[in-house]
Structure formats: structure tokens, C-alpha cells
Length: 274
Image 1 (tube, one colour):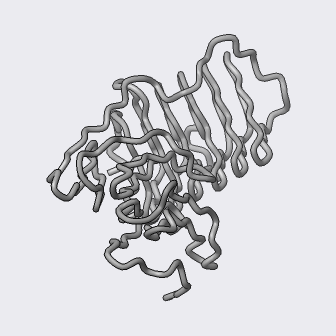
Image 2 (cartoon, helix red, strand yellow):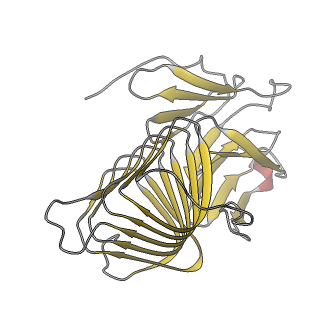
């Protein structure tokens, strides 16, 4: 199915590229900066304008990679944004010349900088991206752990649950050992930070269970994960492994839709994520 919708008016001499983040379309819009649109409805979700737009201060290109958007803003340089429910500025990289085009893939960012030539920038993750485990208390709630939209909860210790649901914008952090007999569901924009061990499902369970990650849902792992059930990664789902020693074992089936992001270093003992 094809859809069309208007964005901004073209700017003479400016470049125009697009990229995707789940159900968002990111558009370089010249003097109007960067636009984020709902790909289904065409509704504009966010505008990131340029200070002193005009002349060579113009948004030429955008590229997404590993949870970030890199935006080439001409003479203003290269901006990096964290891909969340709203794009949040992480920092600006000064580029000699004009940032006319950007493409990021793997661990690298490639920038065409006019008279400055081609710049190749290596991305480095120098520290854990998980929240700190210091001072967290145990979980004392019921058998189903449910986070409402934008709710943030953090726990530590040994936890046994029936199910986990993290709704849009919610952030669940657990440090220690956690077992979940039934489903784990990360809805759009929900995050589950897991440091330690996670076991989902039951060995030879009659009724299949799942870990379900929906668009822009993020499972971050630093440790060991064992999935006795299935893993379903819907379009725009994200998994990120922190550090160098994380291990995942999946005994059920894995279903991966388009535009799924699996990043970081990990050992996949059953080879299910390839």
C-alpha cells in the first residue's frame, strides 16, 4: 500500500533525504530543519528548527542508526539526536566545511563536507547505557508487573512474576535475577533494562509464551537471557546488548519484522537472532 502526504516546500540548492525510525518518517526540510512524521497518517509529530536558518545553514540530510539520528545541517555542522518518543539532542559535531550529506552504518558516520571532503567518524560506546543499580529495592507487588505510560520503576534482587507489560514511554529497570512464567510485552516506546539474569517461560510448556517487542520498544541486556518461549520482534523493535559478555539462549521460535534493530556484542547460543 502506497501513501503520500506533503512535507515542507523545497529550498533551492538544499539537499533532501529521508530515513525511518519505526513508524516515523524523518525528513530533511532545508531552512525548516528536520521534520518527523507519522508514516501512516502523515501527521507531523515534531519539528527541529535551525538557529539562524538561511544561506548555508540548512538541513540537508538525516540518517538513523543504533537508536540515534544524525542530521547534516550545512555550515552549522552535524547534530546527533537520541531516538525516543521525541528526538532529543545529544550533541553537535563540528565539521570543517558544510555538512551536505550524512550516512551512518555499523560503528561509523560518513559525512560529505563540501570543500572539507569526506569525514569518517567512529562511534564509541565507552560506558554502560543502563541506569545504575545502586540503592534499588526489591519488587513487592503482585504477580503481574504492569507499567503505565511514562511510568518509571526500578528494582533489584530475585523476582518471580507471571507477566510483564511496559506501556508507551514506560521504563522498567531490574538488577539481579528475574523469572517470568508467561509473556513479556514492551509496547511502543516501552523500555526494559535488564542487568543480571532473565528467564522467560517454562521448559516444555504446553501453551506457548512470548517476549513481544513492539515499535520503538527496547530491551536492553547486560547479562544472561534464557527464553523458553518465543521471541516476537515487530516492526521497529529494538534489542541492545551492553558490554562484551552478554549471552542469549532462545529455545522457541524467533519472528522478526522489517526494520528491527539488534545491536551490541552478545553470544547467541542457538543462533536464533541471525
